[in-house]
Length: 250
Image (cartoon, rainbow, N blue to C red; front, side, top):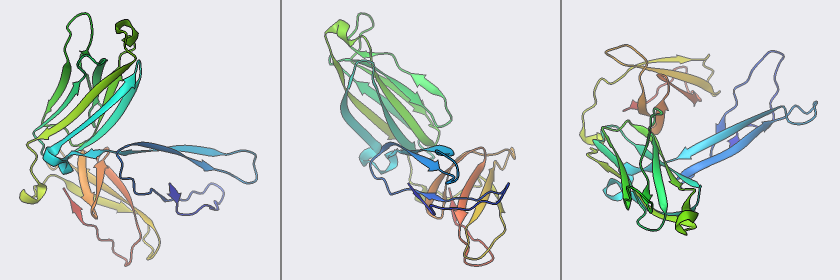
């Protein structure tokens, strides 16, 4: 994490926008850090803000739109995986294969927050099965979270860890370049006072053209992907002229 500046001055009852940039992270996973703000005239830190960054596996870039990983977990522990699913995928599936090397299950959280949980795979006393799967038709675009949980009762089966294979597979995805654009969104923009050469925050509102309600999904703005939250995306812009031009694609 790199703030644009390390020292700022605030007038009484005033505010300042502070831009925070992130180093390029290529390895998928969950990253967290803490931003601390300190008034030098008071003891201790005055503000602390946790920053969490998710770097998902881009399934549309994986060979055959498939990703697989082998790992192990101690009893009662969990591992998190993140997958970005683009628009227009027809099917998404997650498979957890344990065999007789442990006992585990899947928890899958969709971008909108809906959660599905599988039954257990691996050793057990009833309904024993070596693998479990969760499948989703026309999956929601965005970042999906997959949690692999290792049963806390492994010692009952004289095991210490759950060895597993997790596979994510996306089907029916078509490259957007081969699909003509549609009227998916109505877009409006609001910006602060524009000063050439100084940063301004642009707020873009995305509306459903039929219902006129705030839309959701993912858009590309100036070549970078953004998730639409409550129909809105905010981006920092340093204008070179009195007019701001943005390239937006979906």
